[in-house]
Image (cartoon, rainbow, N blue to C red; front, side):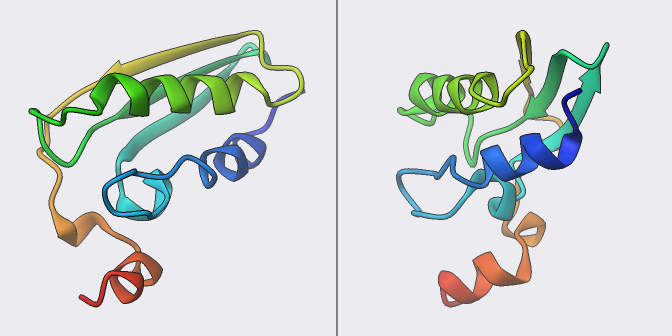
Length: 99
């Protein structure tokens, strides 16, 4: 049985290439659900809609979640509503980035 905590731990390793901070700590993961104990749904955003590395970031999320034992399917929804802002970052990310 896959848990949200396992998926979150896997996503902590997914790092934004520009900032060098995990997507979780940047606040880019808006929603995470484990469905039917095997399928993971993720609603996420990027720091900007014009991010040149969007495909690579989404692919990294997909592969990291797919590596969690028991995960059979990953559904990622990319959204820009609400738009991301630095206010969404964790205190740890703010400290790392000097904010």
